[in-house]
Length: 160
Image 1 (tube, rainbow, N blue to C red):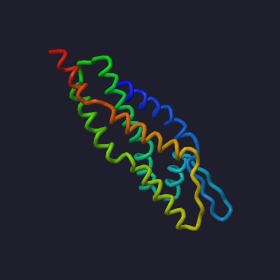
Image 2: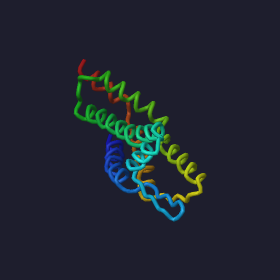
Image 3: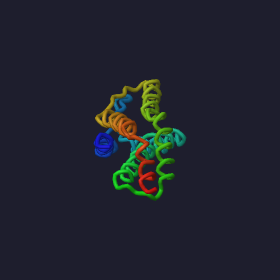
Image 4: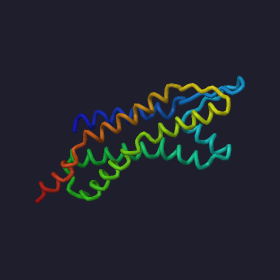
């Protein structure tokens, strides 16, 4: 539990600068554009790439946040021995496990975007948030892996 909490809290704290700091800079013809994740999403939306903007939003902002919140709810329930909602926590755990298989999707999407930009004869450089974002993904994955799902049901068995 302590390792899972430590990894999760680290991911939460790093999630903030990962979303505030620039993630990449694009230099095309001497014009440099630096974007955060959200400004990049907005830019994609404004240049008629709404499906890609939606995928990047879901994969890079929504899913990591929901995954961390789900793990936090499970850990809080285990720590405070909440007897209500055991089946909900079990479903949350299965959702976290399912999403875990796709955890690197956001990194993959960013890699594809880098390739598309490079194809348009521009140079791309990763900014500090790229490393921080990868760290958030890794820490949240490790936090979920450290979580012993049997503890969800131990609370239920204690009440019998």
